Image 1 (cartoon, rainbow, N blue to C red):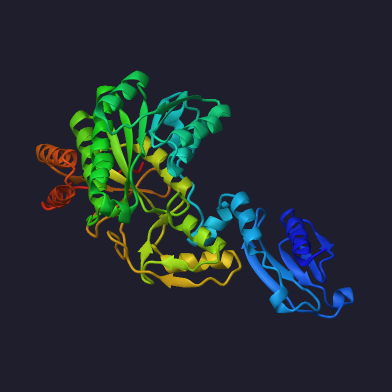
Image 2 (cartoon, rainbow, N blue to C red):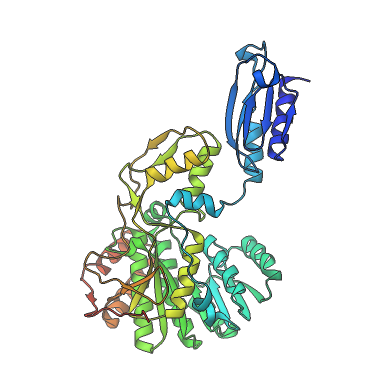
Length: 450
């Protein structure tokens, strides 16, 4: 039996969690660690080769000892380990996420906060995204009567609908692009939901700096279309997913999300509807965010790339983001935007170090510099904003910026014209103009605590 085959036998046993000795020339593999054959087995110590990789069970330390074999003849096995790891890697467990965040996960959106979803018809846009899918699962567990999944990505929509098939709720998958007002009207008037969660958005900061037309079409005009269609369909409760980048926005993403916050608040206020927004930080375990990228880099032995050693972010989990949306729907109030009390901001470089320690590896951290549109620090609200507690733990609220509806309508119409003409420069200029006048903040805070 050659060296490669012997090592694969050890890896197979380890990933199955076996506690056995494999005759590989001097290696004893136990669950979660490996020990060289030494005095305990009556054998002399020998050279060790250590590989630390993620496997389907856990991060296991492999120590390979080959007696009398020159170093140059040792068989490389990392590609085999990595292929197996990528194929079998599970989603992060809560314990790992809590270790990375440096705090316990917040339990929000359950119990009384989800009571309004019982027997309700709920529509979720962007349903097959990381946050949207988790939200759908929680809505189903809350006892909704019908769950309308609106998504423009075909394969993820089919997969999510299949996953929810045994959830005890009527699942209606809808393949639609709700950026189109006629299509949004058709979907909402056909299904007449009681609650709408609008999670569909583009969210990648550097990419949207290069594609402002698509950012406006989706995040601004798409939100305006969903809100208008919801009003026409008589929807009384709507929750919009915003971001901390909307606070004193400087990026394309931040400016489009701030404009969408104003659209939602203005529509709710003018029509007496419970339309509100939530402001999320960095959802670390969602697709395209920090944690999956770091895990990929660790898996292939690459350096962990961090933009700046001083960069900080407010971080939360997918579950916390979905729970915040449900709690905001229970409290829905157009005069405020809801936030999660997720503790102090975390330095991204610390997050990278914690992840490396959790994987038991020595990872190199590479500073790559801020990318277009990125800021060193983000905030969930402005320094002079009043932040209040609500009836639910860890859920906070702050007054939303108020703008004149006529002024907002003119600015949104200008954005729509420039986007239709496919003029990226004019779209950027219109976004900048949208934030030139200082919006008038509410004179008093709105306290929702009981």
